[in-house]
Length: 101
Image (cartoon, helix red, strand yellow):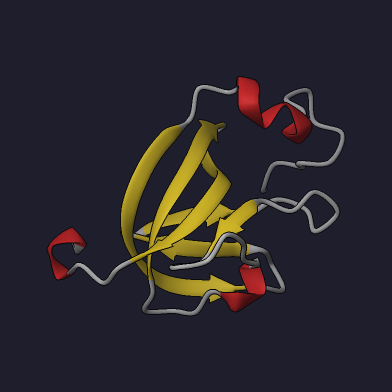
């Protein structure tokens, strides 16, 4: 059972107050309909569409989850709760094969 992010005690609107962790790697799987993806073998939940995460594309000031594609390299800021990694932001970064674990 995946945690409900809507109406959760840990309100997603309070992202700035959460102590975030960070990882970098290849976006190995992206499932937009379920709003989740796999980076470095870990599954990240991207939260509800009504409260979108911050996405920044390479050489751009903005972005959108729908612009990301499998095979891109990203930096992900996230927090972990109940065994799930909840993404706070995604930033496309230059391809770096040394990031593959």
